[in-house]
Length: 127
Image (cartoon, rainbow, N blue to C red; front, side, top):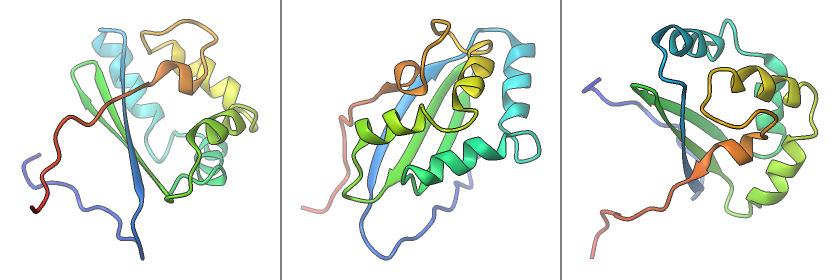
């Protein structure tokens, strides 16, 4: 898509986290993974839990079997605390076990164990 994606506007600055994860390299599994993340098929408890721990926005992009996730949070957000809390919310373990069937990860992994945090290596800013 060369048109780009509009992003949400906030009343102040936010923190951004970027993570990556690989799916199993199987076109049928990838198509099913896409469907289970659609608005129609995603689990409402998972969306609610993400918001409940303080995440403002989450986007997942895909290229082949590589996923790239952007998470935006308030400035005072504590990632480790939020991920620990997220892991205890209703249906979260069930969801992680379900999506693990599509992901190149160890069985029983939490979301925080599967998704690898990326380091920003370039930032275009005004000097």
